[in-house]
Amino acid sequence: MPPPIVAVERATAASRAALVVAVAIVLIAASLPFWGESSWMREFVEIACYFIFAMMWNLLAGYGGMVSIGQQAFFGFGGYVMLMLGNFAGLNPFVAIPLGALAAGLVAVPVSFVAFRLSGGYFAIGTWVIAEVFRLSFANVSAVGGGSGTTLTALRGIDKATRESTTYWMALACVVAAVALVYLFLRSKRGLALLAIRDNEVAAESQGIPVARMKLAVYVVAAFGAGLAGALYFVGNLRISPDAAFSVNWTAFAIFMVVIGGIGRIEGPLVGALIFWALNKFLSDYGTWYLLGLGLLAILVTLFFKQGLWGFAQQRWGWSLFPTQRKLLRTSPDANTFLRDRP
Amino acid sequence: MLETLVQGVLLGGLYTLFALGQSLMFGVMRLTNTAQGDFIILGAFAVIAGVSLTGASAPWLVALAVLPVAFGFGYVLQRYVLNGTLGKDPLPSLVVTFGLSIVIQNLLLELFSADPRAIETGGLSTQGIALGDAMSLGVLPLVVLAVALVATGALQWLFAHTALGRSFRAVSDDREIAELMGLSAKKVYALATAIAFVLIAIAGALQGMRTTVSPSDGPLLLLFAFEAVIIGGMGSFWGTLAGAMILGITQQIGFRLDPGWGIWFGHIVFLVVLVLRPQGLFPKTRG
Image (cartoon, rainbow over all chains, first blue to last red):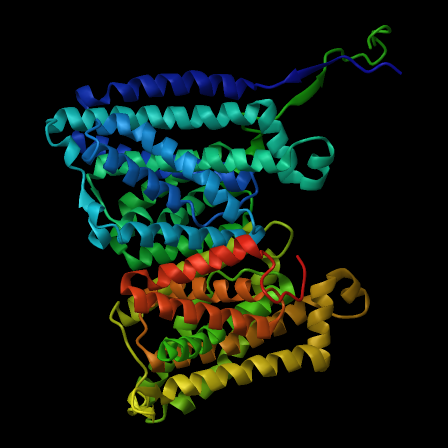
């Protein structure tokens, strides 16, 4: 029997509307430095870093199936490379941001050689050990202030207003770039291969997908993104220390955002970051109780609400703002109108 | 040099106790407990709280009283929380134990503040035995080493020679077949975690006596425990002991060379073992 005529649906009404709304929001956001307050910009830069980092963790764990507790290694590395390029090489720190991200992506290649010896839960803690090696190494380099850290002096000549709005625009551009990067990656042929690997590694390999190379590619891209977030964060923060740069809390917050929002979907970290921002704004004064609540919430969501908030919305109402799946539709409702001479 | 080696072995004894519980949970149900270190610290604080509440002069008795509580706690935790997270996907168990780690750290911070505390042992922690003129060995580290050796031997015996150990090995090798033979994997898992928590409580009590503990110490202990298990190889408790000794000795040598690099040195040895021999030095189980 000849195959039915099918069309591949790759976009939904919601996703087309979301694209328009997203472009509008980005344009409005881009004009913020002209009418907004500088505290809003600082807040945005901070949450942007959390979001990019969570996005990359989602790519690694939710799509690549590699649950890491050590992504802060690349976050801190990106930050330190940016700072060293700015302070020692005299580079403009804003130019150094993408270079820091690039360095994090590059260093991920030799790191993966060690990390990929482990899998599953062992991989998670193994990557944490690697992040500790990064932290202890930088804590012993006196040129960058050792354990107590150092200040980004390269931005001294630039006045505050220019610095803040440029940082803000960089952050906005990085957020858009990170979402676009992940979205286009997942929609590409490689993205399809990645989903196949996540669902069944052996079956994917037998279909001719180069599993090892794909995993390395995802690991490097996620490290690049984490480095981008780190470099950006410390341009906004102006001060870096090994304990802040390589803190496991970065990954802890990323896990929280992704799990709450819904793992394995692009909307997940987006929703998670918004919730995290709101909780942080209104409840962070409670300190230890606030963190305790975050931990408890992550446990409860994992146990009883596995798909997260966006996963729930997607199941219930079929919402999908960033569709990465391919849906086969029969173009003709009448099953008899098959084309005979179709191959 | 000899003194560094001896100190390293004594430190390895402590790391063995950190790691045995982890090794058991890895071996039986492939569960990565990222809150291992925080539970050790929780055990230490439980003894500290017990001593101050009862006004007991003998911390040993309080520590003994904590052990059955830890057993029950581990059983309930595995049976009603962690069993639901097991499966092919490592994410749920990682997120839940990682969440527990954050909860424990902040709860201890709220209850006991960030100040380091110790379990008062009536001077035992400062007593030493002189060996020759140049070297003196602490009594407490020797006790820790002895406990570690006994615990390793007991665990290996339990695994190899008892009905419970047989059921541990059975569910570890093939859960479904073991269940067809009439074992309840969930109960076996719960018992394994219960025993692991007894070991964790012992480790916590001795850590609290040997040095000070503070609520944020947990993650580092987890990493040491993990490194010892991986260096030693999965499923072998003597392997875990050997891994802990290697880690303790390398850290001591590192500390001797430069205090800032001691722990770094231990991590590097772990990573080197991982690259050269990813299955560990003395592996028993696979996968």
